[in-house]
Length: 335
Image 1 (cartoon, rainbow, N blue to C red):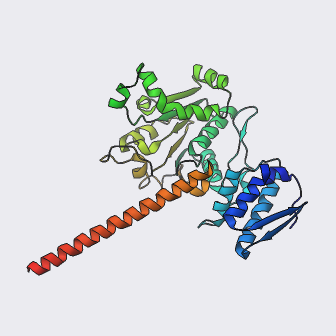
Image 2: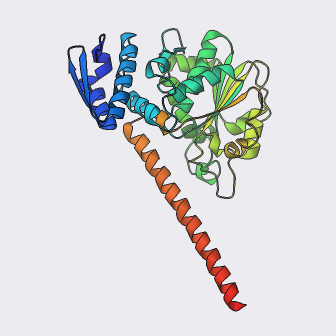
Image 3: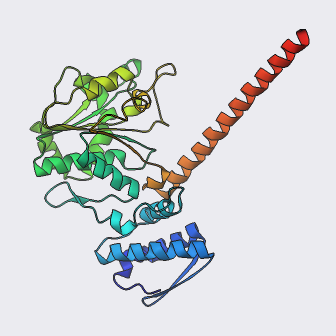
């Protein structure tokens, strides 16, 4: 096959993208000029051919392909649902978050999330760590702010340890809560200059607050994000969702595999999936480990935990069945 254009953007530093593609698909990739030869199992070779063509089309438009994107693209193409969107189609989406800054989705799942954030008034995004739920929600909020479709960006997070643990931290109440809100600042600083963020905060254009501070408010013309929503209770999530006023949008993001609530408290985000999914104007978007774009180890760690949890559930079910069988046998013997 022939691949012309900007090969450096496609191949990565030291051909890292090609080496990773070879490892993930168990194929051999050899470049000679703009000619590429592939060797391996027919199905794997076909996957590699299609992905290389998609990477090449993205590179021709100036996109620099990363190893995280290669890993996600392979997972997307070879996963249970098959290729939903080509990589070049995914990264063709631009989200302007400022006068000189553009953010792009990097997986098909992330593109679905971005589309939902701009099309629905309320989006609940559920997925594992590293899938970009918070980052893309903040990007969508900044984009709406940049284009003038909202006048405020409000980011909230539950302080799940607000109680005894916070009391041991030094400083005033605001300083005690600050560590819980730090990830939201990090997302903003990754897209806008620090002094720009601070200026917007000082003028009330951006607010970063604990979830408890949202009670009693009505939010008009705002893009509101609730991060770590898996750590809200049923009542807290209801309170948040009913804050929306005219011209407002909301993004609720969380990872239901990492719930930090006390054992007897049920997650509001988990409960919401059972009865909010049929409301017009509200969308659920589910991301998977195929959408993880952090360090390559993150996807493998998530997968290992999934296997562990699945095996644990199977063992618990087997134990229950054994106990019930023993009880039935004992009752029959007694009779």
